[in-house]
Every structure is written in structure tokens, then in C-alpha cells.
Image: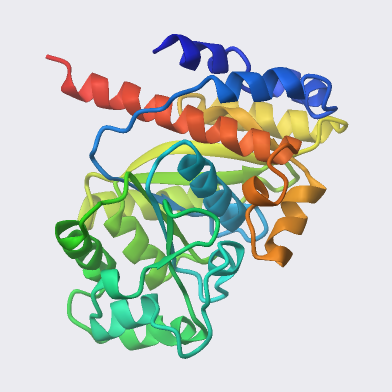
Length: 311
């Protein structure tokens, strides 16, 4: 790692000190460390599916804020909104009314992905393939189509071949279910990120999700890897949050980011303004946490790439 990266690593949020970090006392030092970081990207596109069939865990919130944080560090990022609710499209400020060309057209009518991608007003580096209400019926329509599990993967492969400046990172936001849309996301991705909220029942349903991932690895996408678990909605004032975080780390130590995302009013407010918290309040504790998580993701990706390329 470079010297700036080490400086950030020393300030990465851990479960042990999350409660003290959330009080804002060390925000200036965290901002200073982040400002000193200079990230580089390998040129290979990382395709990451963000999934958890349990709703309300901060999945979409994490997708868009990590995307915005990566873009702020110079990465070209594409968010594919695969959730019919279209919340990621809303948060990124891109139109997604019923008549907007969308992921539905890509999956059902084989539109080129490049024709539906929009640029977020937040950054020219932040792109979005929007969702519309039509996507709600896509699983039924895809059920009879040829290669229904591979349609998103094919679209992304074609996109990367024709686009002039391929994204450094593609983040796929999934619906809170394990249906055909999510299977398409699993089949298209190289990595899986699971946001887990630091609340009761946090691990409920996780075994079912991991079982589905194993089936995808066996039959559709052997290259899919659970690379990242992100702890969200951490409240340092409660013992429960600490216990849940410790339990997740005990089971998934290699995958869990050191950074945890705190409960934050600013994070909750941002989507109502059609923004990520990175744009809405870049100095807030929530924005800092997502920036730290994004840097940690890049650093870990470099380490994995180095290991794979080692003789």
C-alpha cells in the first residue's frame, strides 16, 4: 500500500471504536486522512452485485453511496438498478418514469445497455442504468425466454466491448428477493456484497441467501465470490449493535469490512433530494463512513488482484 493508503487504514472504522467515532469528535482527522488518499484502478472492470433478500438493510443506500464515493475518488462507476422500486435511480437523480428506456428494455427486448445508461447530475463519472415500474413484471416475462438467467450478463459483456470508456466498477442493486432478477445479477457479477444491518434478526435468511449463491456457483457462475460484507445501521449506544457486529465478524471475518456505517439522519434524508449523502452532506459522519468503506473496497480489490497475479 502507498503511504496515503496506510494513513487511511489507520483511521478505518472498526466495531471496537465505532461508538466513539459516531460522536463526531475525530471527524477532522478522518476527513484529513481521506483527502490524503489517492486511489488507482487496474483498468479491469469489477462487477459487484449488492444483495440481501431481507428488506431494510441499507442495500440500495449502500449501493448508491459507495458508487458516489468511488466516483469522488476518480473511478468511473455504473450502477445498474435491478429493483422495480427504482430507489437507486431516484437517489442518483436520473429520470425513471414509465416511458424511460430502462433495464426492463435490456432484459426483455434486448436493448443495448449503452442506450439506456444515463449520467447522474452528481458527477460525470457516475452512471446509472435506471429501473422503471415495468421491471415488476419482468420475471414473469423472462420465465419463458431463452437463456433467461444470462440476459444481464450478456448485456454487460456487450456493453464493455462497445463503450469507449469502460467503468472501473459496476454495482448491481438487487430487489429484496431471490427471484429471476437477482439470479441474473448473481450470474452477471464477479463479486457479491451483502449489507447486514446491526439489528435483531440480522443473520436471519442469510443461510438461504448463501445457499442460493452456492447453487449459482455450481450451475451458472463458478467465478462468483462473496467478497464483501458491510455492516450498516450501527448504533454505538446499544449493546445489541455491538453483539450483532461481533457475531457477523465471528462467522465472516475475512469478508467483513473494518468500516461500519452508522445510523445517520443525513443518510436517510439524502434520497428525498434526489442525491446521495456524498453530495447532500459530504462532511457528515455518514458520508465519511461510506467514503472510508469505498477506499477499503478498492484496497482489498488491489490485494486480491495482486494475490491472483502472484507467481
